[in-house]
Amino acid sequence: MKIGFIGLGNMAGAMIGGLLKKGLVAASDIYGADVNADMAKKRAEEFKINAGTDNNEVVKNADYLVLAVKPQFAAEAIEGFKAALRKDQVVISIMAGKTIAWLSEHLGSDIKCVRCMPNTAALVGEAITAATPNALVTDEEKETALSILRAFGRASVVSEKLMDAVVGVSGSAPAYVFMFIEAMADAAVEEGMPRAQAYEFAAQAVYGSAKLMLDTGKHPGELKDMVCSPAGTTIAAVRVLEQEGFRGAVIDAVEAAAERSREL
Image (tube, rainbow, N blue to C red; front, side):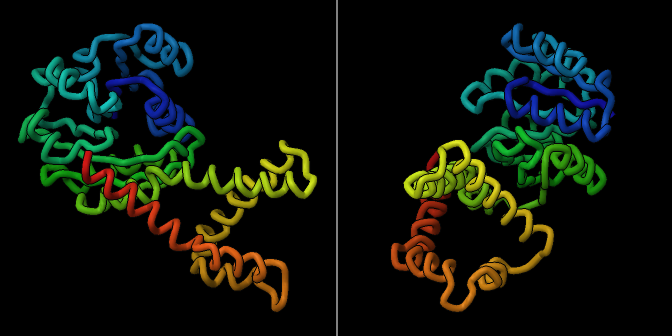
């Protein structure tokens, strides 16, 4: 299997690094192109892949083609290599806001494509990615596409109508989590903890809590109750969060992100 990348920015770099780390493909079977020659050179030196500035060369060699360009430049980029596309290829788009209908219109109605929405945790191999294949993608091709996406985290197939919800609950979520970490660290600093140490404790608490839920499969409410001892410190903190509308604020934030996604 040969994989091509149109665009070699941060997300593409995270994907390539994950693919190589997991041994899914050899570096010699990865092709990439970027309008920025310096970026292409950087990726070639970093990963020992075939990288340059010619999109058509990438398309010609790829079985699975990842579109990792900025959405506003997508139409122009596709127009430049559209003639080189083959019906046996699968195009994986990680471009925000570009629907299956949009991809079919610009790539061609006979091209197999998978619309995806990863998040920035891909940079550390811990992304969660939603994937929606079009009707031309076979079950085997879908599983191969998912294996590519799982090289840098978790991935699941979702109905395209849920993509806006995905934006709210995972695509934009790192920002909410970073704000939460920063707020907890600020409080610890107020209590006398050094800033760097406060960030470490807050971030590890979030990371460990998420891992505990994913590894055990327990409901988050059950895990919360496990921490809340009678008349203890945690239930006192939970009471304040409820009084201040913490849960409602998070719901409103996710819904706001989803609504903005629908508007784009």
